[in-house]
Image (cartoon, rainbow, N blue to C red; front, top):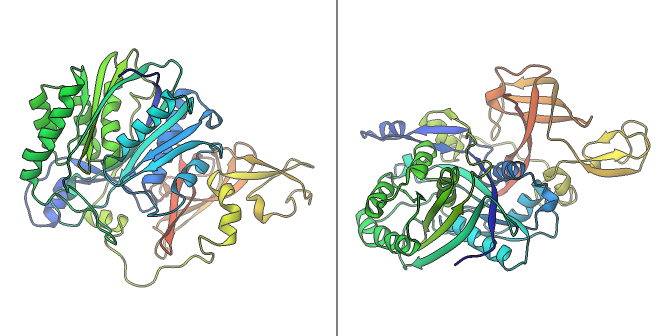
Length: 461
């Protein structure tokens, strides 16, 4: 099947932490454990990673948020079981409020579902330019066999009906009603396979081999590898070069719904035919891509991440909780303040005084200009970079905050002076005059609701 849908750029994001497999094995008194997995810090999740991946993809494509007509987001674990996840992501990205799209979830196949849905919409002419983002931050059960393999990450593709360096040309899908990894109602962690050998021999290899057989030959493949061995077994069975996806698995682990498209990233660096196979929830999809030229963003470096111990990972995942009560927010997330100020928080907006030009941040709490007292404002998007004016570091923070916590006053590049939280890893080296960039992070989970805002991250270059 050939269709008029092209990939014009790609962006990817990895979380802040890394967990060595050997540390997990040692904690449970077992041997072995090779490689590492990427893990979200306490203020990161699938939404914050998705935001960063899309920001990078748009920059690589040379597209502004206003040019995007649709947003398709695939994640097995959205921040809300029910709620405005897609609307929040779109607002944080400053997309138009009339964009098309959907949130797909339910299994590690969600990223492929998002790709196929966006492809169909572009090919049918419903949208001209779309963003597909696949992300995950799965929480494994402590002590499960795959705990050392579970990673987190995000990848975004910009699709267009016009010409691009890579074309989506073919796809095939198959399904089999089996229970693989799953998370039951009310469960915080995802369960591993009941019988790994049965899954390997009677589900995974036969199903993926059948799908790959319908795809034909390819120069490079992205193959699923949920346990560190199935990917290489499938590659041998197909006689396929899956080095691109193997590299990502070695660096980040099994990133769930993001794994297939993250693995495809390396296959888009050179002309040829690339193929990606995605699996999850008993469904398998194969997509072929004809690459005419290296895709912008396909060779970008991912963050190395900080290697941390097993207890810190358990704390970040919310599986190791300090005793005592955390400090509740004074304002419930569903209250009037959040409803009325949600857009200015997520889109990072200010109110520019029409009389003197002073930027008032946030505009909803400034009935009068802080510069001249004027009462007329024009809402505008703030810059997401600036310079540290001054800062302090708090070394004693109650839960859910993580110490040391920098509190910064930042002079943004548009002239606004705003206070932001910083990142713990920047605390030892932060200095007045440092350049910082604003990144979307999860401030808290209050009453079961994740609350998002921007933090200032020290720019490395």
